[in-house]
Length: 191
Image 1 (spheres, one colour):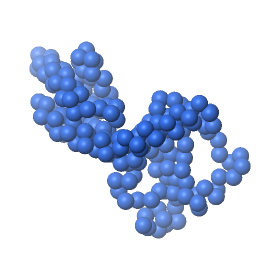
Image 2 (cartoon, rainbow, N blue to C red):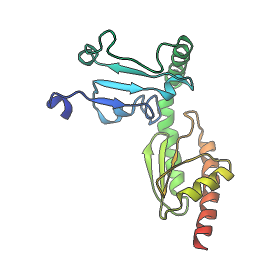
Image 3 (cartoon, helix red, strand yellow):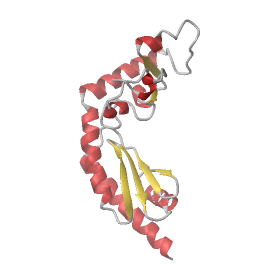
Image 4 (cartoon, rainbow, N blue to C red):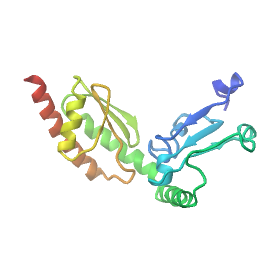
């Protein structure tokens, strides 16, 4: 496949540090789009919590990496490499990309039913929930009070990144807690 980058003689580097290793419902997020990057950077899920990162490159791009031309902060540690091998095998052997796609679609559908949700967007188990008012910070704090950890993205968007092994039942519980937090936040907003 000829990408725009290849057409113009450019290398295409895809950063999969957050999106890679099954998070979006494919092994790597770029796989949703039918493109072939020259280089892919990856980390986070790859190490199962251990500090490790890596890049993969096609033959042409890899030829530029000569002795001493590339360094890494989290590379080469034997314990971390063993953890990464085990984590990647676990994700692949248990089809966690497919699981993330299935559970993520279910979760997004359930989140859409929460009052005041304007839009739910994402892929797999990387989800953004946009609200119709700028109450995101209050919702985030109220979710914490309900023992649900979420991340704030702007004034009105909450990001959810549940574990790759999350179940539909756990998603239902998260929706219940988020709904309570949202109703409380909107009640306070109306005052």
